[in-house]
Image (cartoon, rainbow, N blue to C red; front, side, top):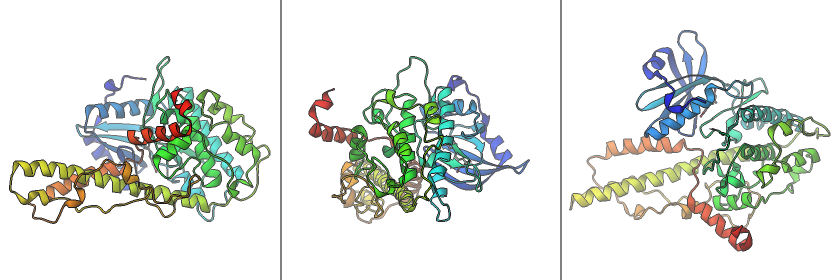
Length: 429
Ligand code: PIT
């Protein structure tokens, strides 16, 4: 792969003259994806707009472009071209109009069977096998990043290479990131990762597709991390009664703590389940899957609330330092409205968990950075409220697109605490 620094991109002016921006398709890590139209051909494409604040971030996006440029596979999104100016990078890609896989199969009129699940997971494994053959690890495989190519076809593609990495020979690499429910034990434990890290996520996606349950989901992120690290999951839910043993074995061969023991994508393609040997033919109930999707949407709201809290905390901090320098001014009262305590883990009434159902009010706020004095603001006169709110709004918009969480150190520490209590010996190893 090229050195990311040396990737030369076209100017954004050219993008503006060549394409017409249409609907927003979604928000992913660090960017907003729009549907666009090529003015000269009328072709519809997708464009990811990424705001750049730091040089370091630009380098990362160029690394993503470097990866995308070299990919060509029926199960991986096609990259077309990219543009840049000082503030923004724009990635133009093919347009996939089938929507997220899970959204599609969870509709009432889609009669999902195990055979359909095989078809989808096989395509996912083909895409992953292709990436892995190029030593590329995706690192953010989750249901939202598996998209159907057309409304009336069942073919799918992998999107969002925002965390992807080309593994260089001999290079050891650790990461902290991804979405808690889908990350592998080695990510949670900040150990070395490799291609097999993606295979864990394939196992999680498969488990959810078949049952609508998220195998490691806990009440808090720490609990989720703890379940992942101890590989605490089962097939006890009644939804698994009609699922074939081959399907469960397939998942069991992926959800293994030791990455070396997991099946590779190639091995998956030869697995009896993916070859559709002895699989169930029942129509699967997708009520849980619909709940899962509702919860995922809700989680994004929860993130929005936390983002707002963080932002208003920041605003307050700035405000108080300003008001200190303007002693006597009433400006310190100019804050965004205090946000009420939003409790519960992303707060969803639809929370569908597998473990520890007894507590239902564990506030994720307790894990948030405290915002001293946040609720002490009172309405007051404020000369510069408008520009501040604009700043807040634009920062928020960016924060809201952070679907992929960057783990909080507290969660990991808390998880280790739980582990220590459970098995003090294990933690020492
Ligand atoms: C589509 C349709 C759609 C989403 C996308 C493309 C997103 C693609 C994408 C996003 C990324 C990335 C690569 C591809 O790195 O619903 O045609 O963040």
